[in-house]
Every structure is written in structure tokens, then in C-alpha cells.
Image 1: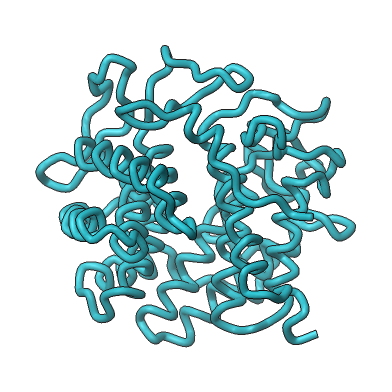
Image 2: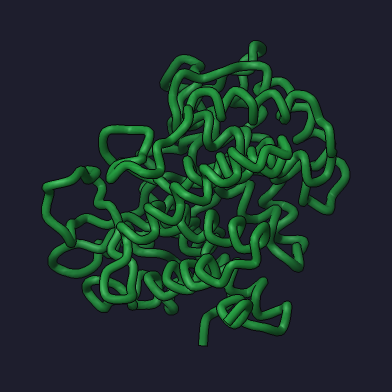
Length: 344
């Protein structure tokens, strides 16, 4: 039985400002403060949860306020806020900027509270005017743009972000042994493939869609071993390096879950439903160490799968990755059928 997505540890990590980045076990490490990366993830996760309870609506308002505060007037974003509410960095367009756009796009498209959705769309447009030189940043931003387009077809800032992302990724050589657009796999790799899939849909470009599906197929095959996921470790991976490798991060698995779900919804191909099942299974113990990273007693997600077991700290990134993946399982259950039976 797959558990419902839990929010008790998300609540434990959250205060009136945002969600704390790190935890010692289940205890928030207040001294480490907050980061926009995690708050934007939290905004995305609570806004796509159904039903959206009054408690989750309050969380969405807290997280949106943090994102708004993080934005500079030119659309760049701060990332790190200390426990006293002081920014520790200058605004930029790193991953946190892209994730802010992803969170804002999701809130604009999915939050049932009109005030939150309207404010999120306006703030999406502010940061969507910027561009980042970083591939992951643009991929995350593109996923936010795709969310906006589901609710606002033809939205020009979203379409322009998708076009810019496709240009930055380039044309992958799917006939190559290494079609990936970077020299090594790093983190949240599937987000790059998913960004192309989303752009192919949003721009009505079948070639871009095929490129994204081809990259995802290659990545899913590479990160599968004996029927379960064996994903890229925190230090990255390139050909010739040993597998399996550790520490494996929940963010990598959650990115695969997101990408496989999008691919399935666009194609109906059961291979993507199988990929989603592997991602869900990874959190529940179907992985290289046969250990669950979902903690049923706390509602949290462990920070990594290590050579010696689990990293039992339950920080925001890992917990949100777990909740996000279990959301896909719950959505499948509510539809009353298993995705993996489609096309079988």
C-alpha cells in the first residue's frame, strides 16, 4: 500500500517566514536558515495537493510571501535568508531563480485561492523577463512556464521562456552513446529532459518533444538496475565511474517521477508509467540498499541513500521530494486505475 503524501514534517519545518532548509533528524536546524530553492519547492507541492485544506492554504500564503520577498525589482532572486530574516546573498539567476518560477507557475495555474494565484502570475511575469546561462535554472523555469500555459494558453512570457530553454539545451544526438547535453550527469537530471518534453508540448513542436522523450528514455534506462532505480549520486556520474554509486539523493528520483508522469500523460506509453512506479518504489525501499527513505513515523523523507544505509536527517529538499513523488501515486489512486496497466 502506497501512503498518502504526508505533510506533518513539512509543517514541523515551517514557521511564519518559510521552510527551514536542514534538519538534525527531525528537528529543524534553525541556525541554518532558509533558502528560496526549498521554499519554491514547498509552494509547488502544496499548490498541487488535492484536496487543498485550510492548513495548506496558509502554507501556500507563507511560501508565496517568501518568494515575493526574494525577488529583486529586475526579476532576479535572492536565495539564502538567515534565521533573523536577513538576506545573505545578492540577487541572481541560479537554480533558485528557476525554481521560483516553477513554484510561481504552479501556484498561478493550480492554487484554488484566486488571490494567491493572481499574485503568483504577476510575480512569474516579473522573473520570466530574465534569462539564466545555467541549464538547470532554465529547465526549472521552463517547467513553471509549462504550468502557466495549462491555465493561460498563449501566455507570451511563458512561451518565450520555453523557446529560450530549447535553444540553451540544443539538439541532442540521440544516436550517440552519450546524448546528454552536459559532460556528466549531476542532479535533478530528468528536469532537463522534462523541460524539453514540456517545451515540445507548449510550443507544439513534435521534434522538441521527441528529443525530450529520447533523453528521458536514455536516462531512465541508465538509472535502472535489475528493475529498480539506481540513480546518479550527489557527486555526479560519467562513463567509466562505478555503479551503483552513493550518496543517492531524493531530488534525483523526484525529478524522474515528474518527468515520467508528464511523458505518460502526453503519450500514454506504459514505459513511463513503469518509470513512475520505480520512483515511488525507490522511496518505499525498492532501491540498491532495500531501505525505505519514507519515514512513516514522522512524515519526513531521509536525506540520502548511503553505502551504509540511510542518512536519517530529514531536511526540506528530501522531504518535499518524497511528498512530491507520493502525490503522483495518490493522483493515480484517485483516478481509480494503475498507470502501469495502460497500454499493457
